[in-house]
Length: 189
Image (cartoon, rainbow, N blue to C red; front, side, top):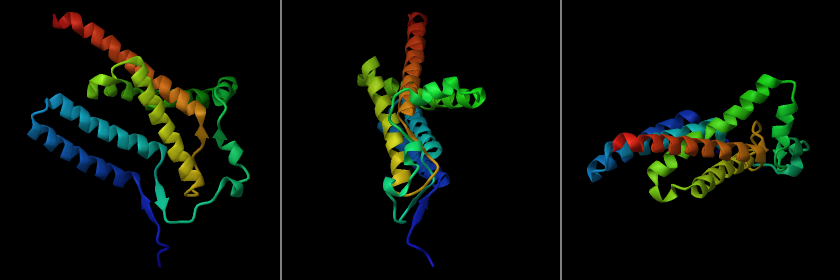
C-alpha cells in the first residue's frame, strides 16, 4: 500500500536534464545558433541539475510536513547571522572539515560567473552577475528550508553564510571570465 507520496531522485533529475538538453540541442541546431552557444546551454542545464542534486535532492512529496515548532533544534540548523558560520569554521580545530566546507561553497556556483555573461550579454556586469549569483544561492537555501520545514526531510541546514560564499564564488568565476576575455582580445587582433 502506498501513502500517496512520490520522490524525485538525482537519477530522475539527470534523465530530465539530459532530455531537456537534447531538446535544447535540437532547437539550437534548427535555429542556426552557433554550436558553442547551444553546447553552453546544454552544459548550463546539466550543471543546474547537478547543483540541485547535491544541494536539495532527494525530495519526497505527499507526506505531511512539520513546522519549526515541531523541531526543538531548528535554531541549530538555521543561521541568519552573516559570517557566524564562517567565523566558526575559521576558529575550528577541524581545519580540514572547515576548509572543505568553505571551498565547496565557494566553488559550487563559480561556473555561473562564467556562464551568465556568455549566455546573456545584457548580464555582463559585476552588479548583474552578483545579483544572479545571490538570487541563485538564496533560491538554493530557500529550497533547503522548504525541504526541511515544509516536507519534513532532515539533513540540510539553512545558512546565510552559504549565500555569501556562493555569491563570492560566482564573482570569482566572473573575475576569471573577465581575465580570460581580456587576454583573448589581443590574440584576436
